[in-house]
Length: 337
Ligand code: PEP
Ligand code: MN
Image (cartoon, rainbow, N blue to C red; front, side, top):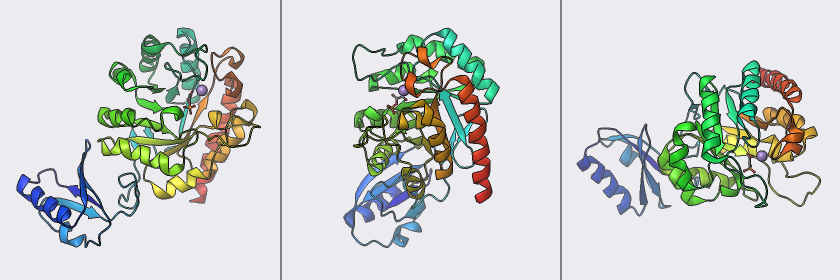
């Protein structure tokens, strides 16, 4: 059960509501986002929500059976739209293309990518400055100095930034340079990081864990929301299966499943999902038709020279073709609705 409280509820009124709920045997969790205060009530005793709905100070009350309550669309009629400012939105009628290199490498690379994105009308650039790498000897990112270069170029050109944060103590320094914090697959269940991003309040692109289930992805999103941040984008990025022919198995089932379960936007990362450049286009277009709200794709002026993930990275010519096909496919999908 979720109780939405009015902004001006008095302490007395709130205590009365809390009293009824706890007496019935429900555990109460208070959640405060920028927009609303909620009491998330966990329990399974039969409860007539009308006994609460008409009480003074209560805005609305909803019965939510799903274990992941705040991210469930059982209670929220309208889907969540992430507003990045300057008219750039993710979710519900906005098909978002996020593109950029796996890793931010140097100033020249940022500049050429930004120029390309502008030519293509792409408003969100991806690029890692903190890179989770299997080998400690691989390139691990330029860190905060790289992020400052990334920000300087993007801010000057009206491009928003999505970049990975790997640990809690990076959030503060990164905060002013980031539009969307990415939580990578390896950190999908780093609950302390999720708590901290909930408190930080900036949009979060939450990737599915390498061997995570979709329900675990929703639970991770619930961590962020229950700490006060409802601006969450879910990202299917492939899971590890017994199949060895490609890097991961992109689970496109997840898209309609998640869309039917949650009000949060769902995007797909076909680059990590398949891990082979030649198949990125097909899987991107398939993601659109599966109902995704956007894609996040790795591109590089010269993928052979990329510091990381070159094998799954599109060059600018391939990316231009993909962007055109993505937009046409999205238009086609829209005609179905
Ligand atoms: C990335 O986006 O470059 C990345 C490391 O992604 P993931 O966490 O999905 O592997
Ligand atoms: Mn990558």
